[in-house]
Image 1 (cartoon, helix red, strand yellow):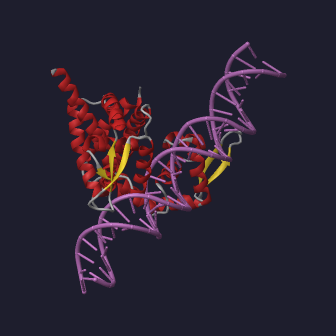
Image 2 (cartoon, helix red, strand yellow):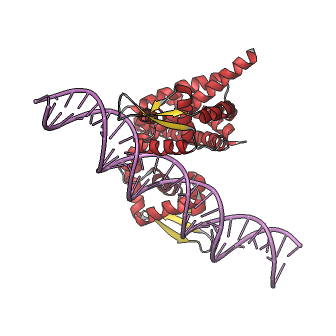
Image 3 (tube, chains in turn purple, yellow, orange, brown):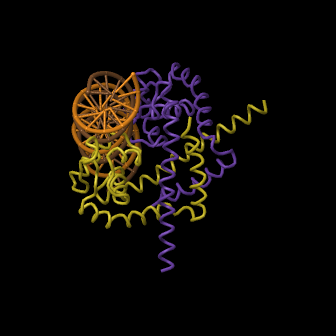
Amino acid sequence: MEQQTNKQKEEDVSLKLFVVLSRALKSIERRAEEDIKSYGLNPTEFAVLELIYSKGDQPIQKIGEKVLIASSSITYVVDKLEKKNYLERKSCPTDRRVTHAGITAEGTELMNEIFPKHREAIYEICGGLDSNEKEFLIHQLKKLGYHALKK
Amino acid sequence: MEQQTNKQKEEDVSLKLFVVLSRALKSIERRAEEDIKSYGLNPTEFAVLELIYSKGDQPIQKIGEKVLIASSSITYVVDKLEKKNYLERKSCPTDRRVTHAGITAEGTELMNEIFPKHREAIYEICGGLDSNEKEFLIHQLKKLGYHALKK
DNA sequence: GTTTAAAGTCTCGAATTCGAGATAATTATA
DNA sequence: TATAATTATCTCGAATTCGAGACTTTAAAC
């Protein structure tokens, strides 16, 4: 009986956490998206471009792993970024299955311009907590996320 | 100079928090979605059904506010749940603009069956933290989300 | 060396979400 | 009361994401 009540409570807290987590992220995403849209990109495009901007040329496959989207979606996003002349595809000479995506001069120029602004925007959006609180939150979220990952 | 370095660091922590938050939620969502799909619903359908199951009949409009989706999306979701015979539309007698969505006997039966299972599943998924840690996390996430909300 | 298995990219169609605008009903204003 | 503004719902088309499967190339197994 006592057992049951306790379990009930634990479940409630977990559900609550799930809801609050979803809402907090949604609020942040809405603002972040607004920022990113003002640069003429959507969040996925920005994430892909940012990856290649900071990490250099990437095989199409790897992009999906890092940004957590399906391979068929990457094709779509890279297509769009290529049309905008921010990325270019380069077929790999050593493995002909592979295509790399690399950033263009125009893409680099764009990111030089907007990345600092984006950093600043995220900083403002996350202003509800101080630096130490953020560090601790990161730590806890990692524990939570790591456990959720495995099944 | 010192000022600049400090700012740099704060921005880094904020970016990191954003990434970790996104990933943690994505891990949880993936598992939660898996659970919900096993009941023949998708997350949005479940959320809408759960709202009406626990709070009673709702005007279509209100559903969107509570579940945070656009009005055009609600129409779509309620259509689907109506086709599955879990919800029914009831036109409001006092305000003819309004349509309420109410849960059917079949919908209630389904939720009686699956809601406890879902609670349990979320509890398992969130097992990376103990109850106190969750409470504290909820508190911090509220602070974070509340700040992000206003602009 | 063939045959099989695996890896990387892409095409296609389905599902979901959104925003803009249409329509209808209600409320506020002049 | 007529007019305007607001509210509620829905339609439509566009954007984004996914999964299944096609195709090519490479690696492994025999």
